[in-house]
Length: 570
Image 1 (cartoon, rainbow, N blue to C red):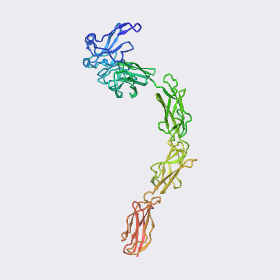
Image 2: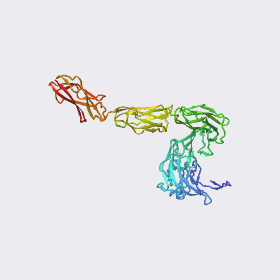
Image 3: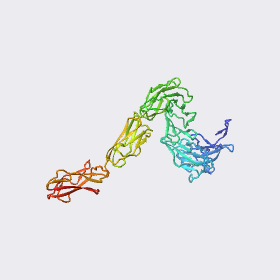
């Protein structure tokens, strides 16, 4: 029925099934209109005969206008399975219709609908398709059984159409070029009770919130991700069961959400809040008090009036800072403050101020390192490498304050001392962690290399001790035992001692030395021998049975030279 807005006199009526009845327009959510004044509704189960000249529009979506001075059907869409839907009580009037903003593409004027079966219909309002018994191929899009039983209207925001099927996840379909995406682009994690049309509150195309009533609960979802932001069961606390008015829709205005129940109007609003009114964003050295106290003001959400007598609790979430007072009551101006002392660790901390019934507020405070106190070995100490070889790990020096916090921008001087070797740089500047690093290449001398890291004006220093080992065997020399005289078949009084050296003259331990008397008939207690830590091998030799002069040579694998010992046998 239509009425004049100024006179409230009835100017038109329309009956969707005057012959049979039942074709109720009971959709959850009101009729939809377009900019030209056309009215769009969906009908419930009844007969359908409009395609053969009848007046019955059961389970159909209608476009009505008053161009002739009365309320007439200008166009319609009826699903191909209308008779089955009506027979099984799966009519489409359980779902309200949604007129979309003008779109690009072949179908600029769209309407979206669904029903108890959960099929999504996308219609061109300029040519709604009417009835095709062979299938709904004449309409823009159809997604059979896609969203679950719809007892609510779809809702549109920011190129997304949302459906809240009964006992199904909320589903959001993208809209582009006059078409919905074939599958949802977002959905909620849990199923939601249906029966109430959702609403959107937003700041234009930002900060969108989808509001839904399900059973006794009012819920709010992030409209971009459909993650739940808020929920309350307060709708059921005082009203008789069922508490909600049938198919009621929440309304959002001026920071409040209005919900009509069977016995009351519930109004939900923003919490009173705490505001950071002083001391936020400070930086100070660790283990010192921030120069400005952390101050909050407690105020009502709408008028901004001060709230006195509220207990405010300050916490840094276990970051080991301390407060002059962790619990403070707001004064007559709604203010509460405390002094915060940073912990010994240099880092950025979040301090939270909270009070029962008020929205909390956070402060971000940063502790920086104190004065330089220690020059320390961070890593790279006690490595091993052969002569003239770069150590596998760099030598890392850390410059810290008294509490171990690294200090950036400090120049560290490094020296290999008299032992020698080569550093990749004689100095390095500490990074954000207080660390400076260089690479060290060993010298030609085997032994213990000491590398020092120092900072001008500081007595503390970092000392690295690295072990330089000999290179591969390159030569062999006689140390002792040459020129001895002994009777036949007699052990020499002194062993024959040879030393293996690398190319730089460093003794090589662990080298295999072979001794031979050229088949003269003498004997060695052990042969070959392995050089000890001093690079030497000591052979015990028993003279042969025949007198004469014997030459004993000592060789090392892969070394071209050999060493000879002369033994006289009497």
